[in-house]
Structure formats: structure tokens, C-alpha cells
Length: 220
Length: 241
Image (cartoon, rainbow over all chains, first blue to last red; front, top):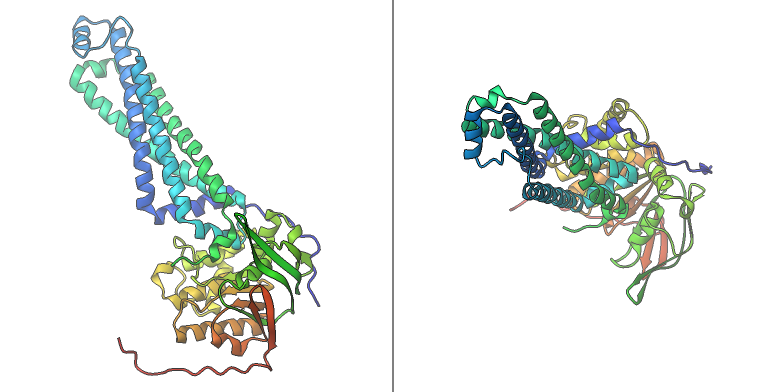
């Protein structure tokens, strides 16, 4: 009376909402770990956001064409004739910041994978597919990236407002470029989200390649 | 139920070839309690891994419940491990970020059940192993013996054909180890699962139906319960620190 199983089907895929809840629960209980990864994103995105906002502020103030304001702008070393655009050095600096942040997230995620080799192996012994493992790492990175970007966005906005109000006084409010600010905030959020998802590619792939037999290895 | 015929395994390490298994043939019936014994490096773990679909033989064949494991792709193996095999580890291997209930529920989620139904099933199994009052504890908040009980519940939650237990008492003290063996035995009797353990623990022998001794990659001897009747003495007394 041997139970025959002639054709073994493919393993069922775990749906995204369930992957989300598993990942989120993991991050809640490894909160400090997630926070450290997030700080890198927060700082980079805050910097990006600050630079983008300053550009729109300055452009909007130049367009105002007020003499008093032009004096303030010149005192702040703004090149009025060039229209307040960002120079090459600044673009390079922003690029480098984002790149550093990208490497930082990759590093943190790779560490998370190495730390959890046994955990990944165990899950695979219990029936997790490569796809499930890949998805959990993408969700983890994306959530950290989006939360980090949102915080960075707020930080960038606050700092930019404080600096601009201090330098240009009420002109900053009078010429407040609402449309430009919204665009800058959205660009920052999007950049952070893309950054974190791109950063997860290599770690997630490495995690999926871990073998279930790793679960049986005893290290202690 | 499980049949290994002429299984060999050769690992190539640089230029050297390591023969982990040199032609092992064994048959295991449903509902048997089999202990695989052997010194470390004997090929015990390799054989063990092959039955669980964690490793494939170089030559020879491993059939479990009538299907050749070597023919399965990784997704089919995941299906097979999920539903047909329950794993129990020496170091428990509970997911540290999940509560007892979540740990036991996860194999059912992998099997395609909704989280709610999975938790319901997990609750029943945890009750059965005597941990109905520890559902929301994290693994780090319970004792080693309780962690292994959670792991046993997790191994049984999908009603597998086979439970593979790798040194299940290796990290436990004598008394707790005995409780775990009793629990495994009880599950075998009640659920009819086949239990295969890799072990050094002499206590496990007295309840084994079959004892496979492996040395240097070959089966040295297969004893049945009648051949060995090991009685293990116990030491009771006050613990002095």
C-alpha cells in the first residue's frame, strides 16, 4: 500500500500580499537593522531633494525680477544670468551621493542574506521556492527604500525651507514655486524607490541560489 | 516507500575525489522508525539529504513514494518537500522573527493555504505537541525543548509521509531529549508517519524499528528492533551547579 504519486506538480506560488506580510513582520522584528539600512537612503534622498528644491526656489525668484531680491541672490552667489540652473559639479555630486547610497543598500542587503543563510535554507526545506525568496528580498528592499525616501524627502524639504527663508526672507514664500516643489518631491521619492529596487537585484539573486541543505549545517 | 539502490555520491574537491557514498541500497517501509548511525564523515548526512531531496546521487537511484527524486526540477522538489517531508533539525532552525504559530503555519502557506486557515491548522498541531499556551512567543522566548516541539509541530503540519530528523536531540539535555523522542514515537504511532533520524543518541535506538549503521560510505549493518535491545540508564538526582 505504497501511496503513489506519479506526477509531481510545480510548487504553488505564494501571492504578493502574503510575501508582503511575511517581509513586513520580519522587518518589524528586526527594526533596528532596517533603520540602519534606511539611514543611507534618507541622507542621499534628503540631499537630492534639497538640491532639486533649491533649484526651483532660485529659478522662481529669478523670474520674479525684483531688484531687492536680485541683490539677495547675488549675495548668495547665484549666477542670475545663467537662470539658476544646476552646474555640472552639482550634478556630479548628486550622482555620486546616489551611487554611494546604492552601494550602501547593496551591502546591507548582502549582509542580510549572509546572516540568514540558514533561515533561507530552512524555508526552502519547508517548501519555499526560489521565487518566494527573491520576492521577500525585493519587498524588504523596496519598503526600506520607499520609507527612507519619504523621510529623506521631508528632511530635504524642511532644510531647504529653513535655508531659503533665512537667506531670502519673505521672498521665499512670495515666490513659492508650488508646482516645482511637488515635482522635486516626486522625483526624489521615485529616485529612492528605483534605487532600492535596483540594489536588491544582486542580493535577491544570491539569496535564491542558497541551497536548502545549508539549513542542516551546524556552525555553533 | 523509500528505496535507495546502488546509490553513490562523489564530491570533487579540487583534484581530489571524495567518495561520500559507495553503493548504498536500503529500503524503508511506511510507518517505520529508522535510525541512521555512523561516525561523522561516514556519509550519514549525505544519505539523509538524498532522501529529503536536498542532494542527488552521482549514480544509483533514490525513489520516494514511487517517484525518482533525480527527475524533479527545483520547483517540483519544493512541492515534494513541502507536502511529503517534514524536517527537524539539530539546532531547531525556527525562523527567529516569527512567533511559534507563524513558524508552524508557514509550510501550509507554502502549500497554498490562506494564512488564516494555515494558522488554524498550526494552532491544532501546536496544541497536540503541548504548546497551545505558547502560540505568540518568539523562539527566543521559549526553552530548547519547547523550540524542538515547535519544530516537530512544523514538520507535521502538512501531514507528511516522512519526517527527517537530523540529530533531533543533539542540542538538548538528557531529560528533554527523552521527551522529544517520546513525542516522535507518539506521532509515529498516531499518524503513521515514517521517521528517519540521523543520530548518535543511544536513547533513540530502543525505539527504532530499524538501525542502519553506515561506515565509510557503505552500509555496515542493518539491525532490527529484535536484534538490539538497548536499555539506557538514567541519572536522576539534584543538579549541582
